[in-house]
Length: 426
Image 1 (cartoon, rainbow, N blue to C red):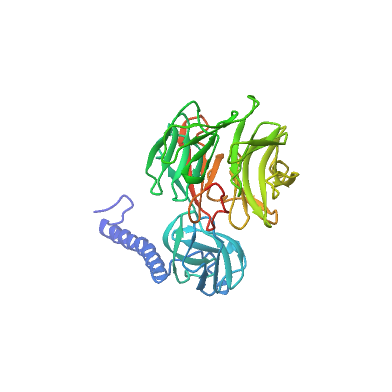
Image 2 (image 1 turned 45 degrees about the horizontal axis):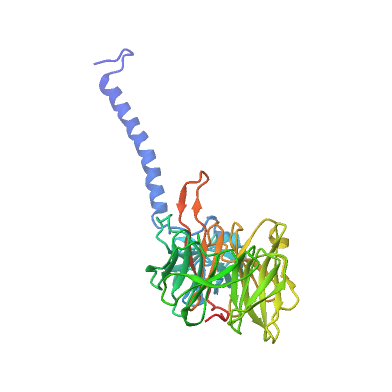
């Protein structure tokens, strides 16, 4: 058989077959060579440069401080070892599958903030010059903030302000509901049904478990120990008074203030006296410094807020006010301080309506945002120390950009790894 050019079919087929073998064989050899070259390759960690001259030694972890656990998203962790890199962009510290934020680095020590992912995990390190990860280190990240009450789907139960008793029970004045008692296991009961108030603007626990409360008018109310109906404790004059804040001092006097021209001291016998103070007081707390009790207040006027303090002398009288912290000067006008409290080491905490809501102020007046990598962007309405190292705050309900409900108004439980300053009501 012949093709049109006179070549026999058998000869032609033989030539074409030989060409086909060559065409198939060459790519196959290349592919097999590629596989052979990759068969012993170790999966890189953060390794990017394959040139032999750039290869670095594998990083190694020898110790971690704190040694066993830390707060997720909060604690500065120090890792000591070898073969690290001083360039923070060329090294990664993994907590499980997520990388932490490296604050500083040398060849033998790293300072890193872990991700906000609580749990038990392994820490390991990679660099962009080493092929292998470091050895691993077992570690626990404890939660620094937990949404504690109410249930995440409950947007009708709205806590407004809170206080805690000596047994760790938390009392929450809930909008249009009354006072709810929340046990340490987060179970709750209605402690005092709503009366004439929409909600209490501030509550304080008194001697014998009596709960004191203000609601922005001229009277202070009490709820008996064990719960029940509220009743007027003392009524001040004039009738135009707006008493929204209350606080006990070490002598058992109850201090009351609000948007008035004075601060009021109410003695245990219910007699009272006034001290001129022409500000809107949006928060108050007693703290003893250097043996002297001071009344600290968030004082607002013309959209500006300053934290002031006034000494209380041996006769229980209020001394001259002094500026303690210029809140608006540091964070801008128009923002509010909704509550304030202290830890046992004198650190002050402010509940605010800043995007990141809680401000801390150290004794040396240095300041910043508490748990900025952890807390959600929503105002803090109230603060209350629980037992142990826990500070609770009320986070305002979170909606999306269209106003649709996302998260309820929630009591959040913070682990501050420190305890409360003394409270003088109980």
